[in-house]
Length: 146
Image (cartoon, rainbow, N blue to C red; front, top):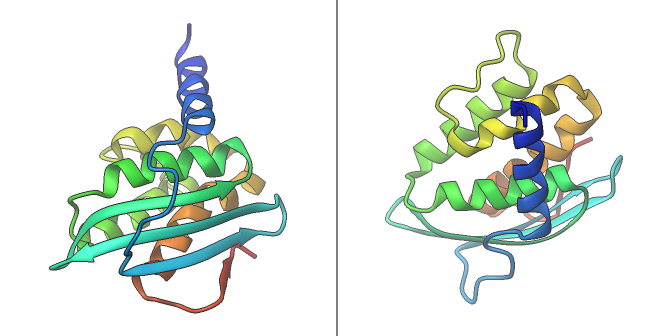
C-alpha cells in the first residue's frame, strides 16, 4: 500500500465512522454550514469553557472529504485553547491553498493534504472549520463556502 492509498483509507474510515457525530446537550456555540457546490451540510456544536474547547460535536451530511474533516478536526480540538484552534484553522487553510503547502504539525489533518490537488474540494475540506469559527463567534445564519 502506498501513502496515497493509506490516506484514502483514513479519509474513508472517518467518513463512514465519524467521531463526535451528534449534538451537544448544552453547547456554548452552534453554527450551520453549507457548501452549495457539493451540497455538504453541517451543524456544529462547540463547548468552550475558560478559553478552552472542551467538546465539539457535529451532524453532517455530505461528501467523504467534509465529513472526514469534521471528524478529524473534532477529535483534535478538544483541550485546545481558542488561540490554538484559530491557528490550526489558519495552518490547515494554508496547507490547502497557500503557495508553500506544508502539512507539518497538522497531525491527523495531514491526510487531507491531497485535497490541494482538487481546488473544488478545498471548500469541502474547509467547511467544518468555517462552521467552527462561526460557532465560536456565535454568528447567526448559515456559513457558506461560496
